[in-house]
Image (cartoon, rainbow, N blue to C red; front, side, top):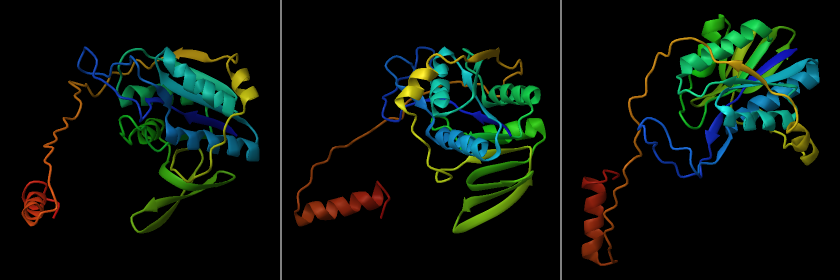
Length: 248
């Protein structure tokens, strides 16, 4: 089975970010970047499919040179091939999807697996975009996945229950938390991954469909009102929660 897993590099959720001087991107200085957490489930599912059916796992990411670090993580986990689509410019999801679709057209994978979303932009659009560009079926946020020959069955979490859908290979899957328990790479595998080759290729020449006009951090306004347990302050607190905060 030829498996393509798509991953991305994102800022750690504990990192404090600042807007860059261009006003349209974050300042990378001092920002710790990590493998997108949902992509860990995608890598693990790809590795399990390879272990069950044979074949190989190719991991791809689109981004600047620093993105290679997440590919090293995937190689340490067990990925066979790493592909870096080099793109230092700020591109939109359509260009990223086009780059992945072009790679898939050349390599003819049986299945493409994503994490359900990246935790930085939370767009939820990339897997479906790739599927649309390729003309393949797409199953989003799969919490279970069964493949029998070319028949695909997946379970999805929906409001108040579960939904079971079927498709056929080739197809695109996005992995939900709970699909599996991602393995931790061992130290010898981490060391070996540092010297493994990473294939580089240019980004798609597709024209971006979306332009970022500006980026701002949310304003935090705190009134810092100090209150006691007096009846007057309690009445004042209830009024503020009702009239200003509108939570009661």
